[in-house]
Length: 178
Image (cartoon, rainbow, N blue to C red):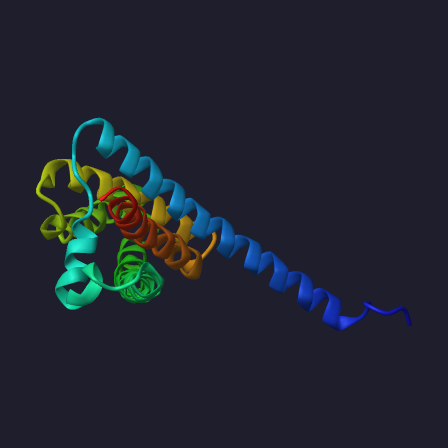
């Protein structure tokens, strides 16, 4: 038997495929956040509310080193992303799809309603609620598509990438440029 053959090779290939999918999903979240940050910057909307919320829970963020703040912020934002995805895409989305059955129009209306609730739940994160609700609603639709096509853990990875990018980029910008 050749080295590298057998049952373990197939399993390792599956693990690499999963890792690639999760990495691509995380990168999709980073891309969504980056596009949002650039678009908001171009139309004059200041971002950084996620960092302000983080500062309420971690008041030392302004005086602490970025080498401390970034990992702590990333970890706490990851917990938020995981809990939101488990609730909305893992739980409520499954209920909507199971309840609507084979009626695609009703299912899509249920998905739209679910994403509207999710977007409205983020209103406290901004001083421009109309623009933010639209942005988060579109993001929610993308996360539903990721969940339905690839899986819940990929939507979690995308949401983590999005949250971390939305905090880290403005934080680093503020830290570097004052």
